[in-house]
Amino acid sequence: MIVFPNTVMAVCAWIRDQLPALSAGKPWDVPLVTNRWNDTDLRSTRWAVIVRNDGGPDDSPVSQSVSLGITCFGPRGGSESEDVACERLAQAVAAIIRDCAQVGLVNPFAACTDLNGPYPVPSETGRPAYYLTATVTVVGQPV
Image (cartoon, rainbow, N blue to C red; front, side, top):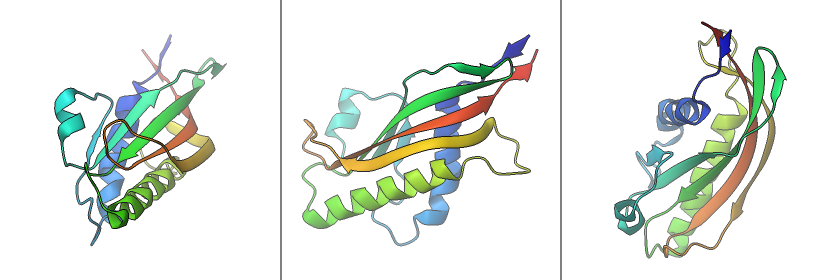
């Protein structure tokens, strides 16, 4: 029997682990990286990366493809320079996802097979926002 990991939690942990190396001197410093979003987060001036699982098929008995939706938010009422920085944050997240299958590392990611974006999206929050999608292949573990 094979059990697949919680892909969203694994992606959030991977982004949290890798982002500091790409954040030196950037305005986002340490953004909130999560799969949950609440009213407090909407009012926050903190940078945020929200990861969503959009499902996907099993590729084999031991691997599955998972489609992800990822939105990066800048601070509320941000300036044009913060909009540019939000796009840079989204580009950094895209690079991290694209590079998730690291040979020799213990993680569930076998590959990033598709990545689209980041694209600017309208946000009801009054915050700059960029959206990207990715498909990652994850490997299950026997139980």
